[in-house]
Image (cartoon, rainbow, N blue to C red; front, side, top):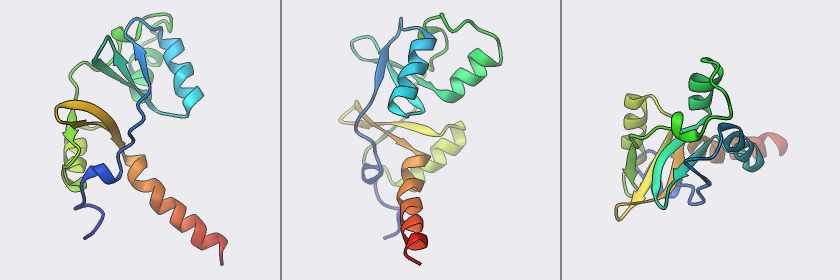
Length: 135
């Protein structure tokens, strides 16, 4: 079985970092830097949005929006998700269709993790780096 036909559960990051929807854009960016991540879930007792580096570049930097605004102004509200048992190739098709690099993962209807292109590439990168360093 190749890596594209296995369920995304194999590549899903279970540790989600979040911010409240009234958090400032600046503080959200600081959290991304603090945890070396490119996205955050936005919560108000439950997940109400999603924020990525791309959102910040496109909706804040490029438009000159003050970074003191709350993340609710720029977050993505229409969440695109995939079930944890969906094959990787189907998730990649959906990500391409929606032009996104991060996919929220659900299990039993609840958001439980995150799948990103980086999650798929990093294990391969580590194998390559190990092979190169052992030569």
